[in-house]
Structure formats: structure tokens, C-alpha cells
Length: 481
View (cartoon, rainbow, N blue to C red):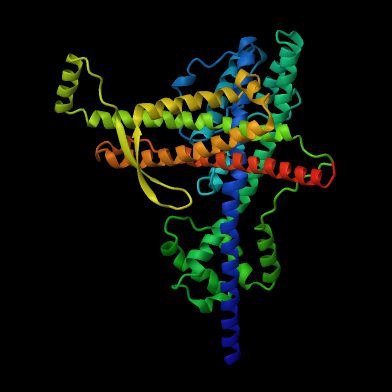
């Protein structure tokens, strides 16, 4: 009897320790997905959207496809695949144009509305994304493809190549882009499948956290397969009320804790939860420092899209607040000012911002029109840096590395300050409108998170450049080239 009690106590301790290990490993991997892998997936989709739009434009100008006339009337509310039923060759222009239009709209929806974080990418959503990604086999756009859409697009591209109408350079760039987007989408699919497998382990971790580690759980059930299975099922509805019970995954948990081969199963599980960063091949020659310092410049240029979204939402929120404040008294004052030729007073918002590093809160006065004018200028400026053939990019590329480095440092600092102000404005609008209009206020937290990630990336690239410069300087002092 005493031996049985000792075995039970030891089993409870081992299971508790293993639970803690699994939960910690899962939490760390969630952080890795959110900060490292999923931002790359999001960036790949954005690059893919640019490619699809360029491809669509070229095919349309050569009259190889007929655009969908009802494209803008279609409303997308969820991720779905593109129709892939067969059609005749004489229908190719219309059918391919329709399907490419639908495909471009869906990629745009994914880029705009999908949150690339573990919490939002459930197993069912991953399955939909993978099905959608298979709408075109970008690595096999040929007559031998098993996908109708891919065969039709391959035929259109073959016709484009054979009949000309575009410069050889444009044709070459287009097919290079197809090769690149095929590689990018393969990487996206690999990442999504990796996340899909991880979601299974995350589910099991949630069961361990909320059910097995619960104070309601009968610890004597931990060393018996059937007893543990029954205990999890008993507590599941109350401990995890909004989740569906997966018999398969719960059985895996029980086997990891009670089966004869549990040690091997546990080792395999912990191994699968390890974060494996891709090893970068060492280059025999040092990096091109100028190219290295231009990397964060191009990264900063990608701020344009998010700032554009923020700008539109701020205008919307400002208009709602102005509408609320448009009282009879203000109308009279406005009328009197116009009679005497006086300008309207500037619209000023007093917001609360949190200083980074100290977490101290302070009040800041924002003059709305001036703030928005400066934001619009910043958007326009970054937009001109996003194209390598633009005059502004060429001008920046012609500058010395030290000048570019100082420019990057200044931009990162200014954008950090701007982020603080935008966070303050976001909270200000939410708190200032009446309850009736609160649902009309458009929050910008998602955009701010994306902006922050871009700035973090630019700062990392800036730091990498600085490290190489410092290393080069040290080697120079030692007389080593």
C-alpha cells in the first residue's frame, strides 16, 4: 500500500514537471512564431500581391485576359479557394481573367484583414490558406500541370513570350518574378504546415495548463490510462468551455503520461517544440557595406502602406468627433468668424503618451491639421523610396554610407516618437466619442504593431551594418584587410 502511494506521488511530481516544461516550450514557440516566422509569411503575401497585380496588368494590356467587370461589387468575408473547373480554350481570356481577379482580391483580403499571429491562425484557417495557395501552381505553369488555372495561365504566358509586345527585359523580369514568387509561396506553405502541426501541440498544452494542472483534477488519475482519460473528459467542459474536445489529442496526452513508452513520446514532443533557427551560410568574402546600409532604407520604405491605413482611420475618427462637437453654439461662432474674415482656430487634441524606456506618462498637445500634413509628407516620402528606379531612391543610393546611416538613425528615432503620438491619438479618440459612436471609431493597434515590427527590423539591419563597420575598423587597426 505504501509502495503504491509512493509511486503515485512520484508520478504526480513527474507529470507536473513535464507539464511545466511543455507549457514553457509552447509559450516560447508562440513568441517565436509571432516575432520571427509569421512576419515573414505576411511579408511574402504582400510581395506576392505586388507580383499578381503586375502580372494582371501585363496580361490585360496584351488582351490575354478580360478583367472581371463585377470585381469591386464582390464582398469577401472569409478565405476560400479559386474555382478550378475545366473550360475550353476559346473561354480562356474571360475565365482566366475572372479567376485571376478573384485571386488578386483574395490575396489583398489576406494582406489587409488577416492577423498573422498564432492566436488568429487556427488549424481550420491554415487549411483554408493552404487550399487557396494551391489555386495556381506557380512552380508549374505549363500544359503538364494538373491544375486547370495553372495550365491556362501557362498558355497565356507562353503566348505573351512568343508574340512579344513587351521588351525582352520586361519579359525576363516577369519570368524571374514568377520563379521568385513560386519559391516564396513554397516557403509560405512550409511555414503554414509547421504552424498547423504546432497548433496540435498548443491544444495539448492548453489541456495540460487548464485541465491537468487544475486544482479540480484528481491527481490519483495521473498514473492510470483509463482513469486519466476519464478525468480529462470530465473536467474539459468546465475548464475549457469554448473549445471542442479532441479525443485523438487527449489520448496523445494520456499516452505521454501513462504509457510504457512515455519517455520516448515525451522526448519526441520536447524535441518538436525546440526552436530551430535557419543557419546562414558563411560567406568567404565580407558583405557589401553599401548594400547592407541600404537594406534598412528599403525596410523603412515599407512603412508607407501601414501609415496610409492609419491616415485613413485618423481622418475617419476626427470626422466623427467633429460631428459630435458641431453644436449650435459652435455654428454661431463659425458664422461670426466668417463674417469678420477670421480663420477658424486650429483643432488641438491633448493626448497622453507613455515614454519608452521610463514608462512615464505625460500630456502632449497635437495640432491635428499640422500633424496630418506631416504624416502625409512622410507617407509620400517613403513611397518614393519604395521603387529602386525612383529619383529619391537613386539620390539616397548615391550618398555616402555615413550619411545614409545617420538618415536611418534619425528616421527610426522620429518614427518611434510618432508611434507614441499615434498610440495616444488612438486612445484619445476611443475615450472622447460618445457611446453611440464608439463602434464607428476605427482602432489602429494592428497597424501600430506592424509598424513597430518594421522599425524593429530596420533597427536590427542598422545594428548589423554598424557591427560590420566596427569589425572592419578593428581589422584595419590590426593591419588586416
